[in-house]
Length: 121
Image: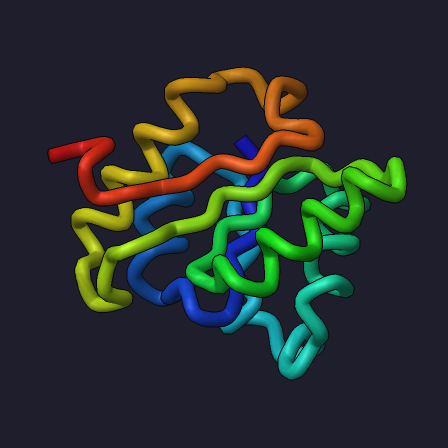
């Protein structure tokens, strides 16, 4: 799968582990993405055919809803909820679980998923 990790999802820890099985771009590893607005990041993810992975539920839930209402497509969004940023193993399990429920990249188009603790525990 092709993924774009938002700046709050550790590129050093999470992206490195996910790269064993996926094509991962991490915003916190790319200087040119520093300070980008959320909507611009989702647009980049869409242009590159990447699922957006983020802890920023408030903004990305709103953006994906607005895009759907406007008929604007995105490549998918995984909103991680109720998990501490430092729970790296759990974050990886939640991401893997979410991706396993829709194992084809195309199945994520215009789909927003909630990655929650109880999905893996």
